[in-house]
Image (cartoon, rainbow, N blue to C red):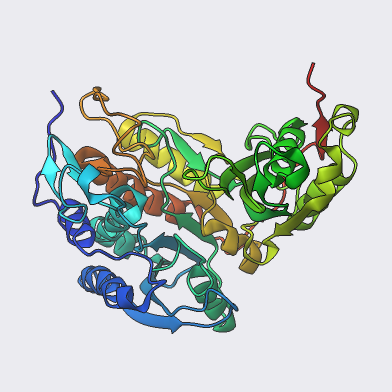
Length: 460
């Protein structure tokens, strides 16, 4: 049986302290004090390892999402640095949702059966605790090697608009003339087992709406209504009939998904609604842009496949108003694997005796901002398992339905928390050694070669 970590372990204690702060993204100003408190906890831990701390508050910058955001920048300098590696993390969490569905208080940091429970432990307070612990673990080694700068960016706005978070801190660094050579984004990066995957990019995300004005009326009298739901139904069928072929070995294909509908009244079954709205989301590869996707949607609905033109609801497509929220779109990025990716792979091999796979699957992260502000820097993403981890090879009856990031009873294994610290520590050591005597950055963040454009598929 696997020996469980000491509950007094520095990473476990810090992770628990962080989880116990209910730092929901401060969209509402009432949540600002707790977001600040979460940074206070991290800052105090980093100071004990010799870090210099800078607190950075930003607000404004967007007509809708202008709420104030607290951020932190920590820095450790060893000798005469030839290279600079920066960790990016966030301490804000999504709301816990229905508290009755949780087994315990979402912010208790409960430790039970080899797991720590709490909102944000996987995404991504556990990773933040592991990185700070890794610097403490590596202090003597880094002092002896003596030619690297290590830094950390923590924000309290990653889970929402991200207008005044990591992106602003990166721009602040650039304005000061500080340009890290490599970044570790501490987001969850594997599915079941720690270290199985290291991300070298992520797809983008574009969100938008369809709005349709109809005519309200009695469902039994077709001459008295025009049903807006019919237009939305046909539009979704048309767009979902497109099969994208723009992925590659690192990225899944682009996909369009209907997310939510707002129409009608379940208490008025005979009334056709006078309007309908649909929320949609597109996850897209570096072959696409928000502009090209907006053009695709509008063009496809204006000139759909022949089967759709023969549909009786085809004329209703003209009544759809398409809105693409391009100003808040998350752009995709791809970082050519270099010394940092190799350093992390070697670290996983050393700590876990596993070979990590490099890929770009999953959701959007703050790594996308690095690609925009520091395009020459190498970026990897490495963190805890997305699904909550596995203790002693047993997934449990609630695996996938509970325990994962953003799920009820979010959790992480104690063993994964400690091993992630070891992996980060080995990565820092390996990356430092790989650059002995070198100050050249040969690895640029760039777009991978992918096949462009979708191939329309007509249902058989």
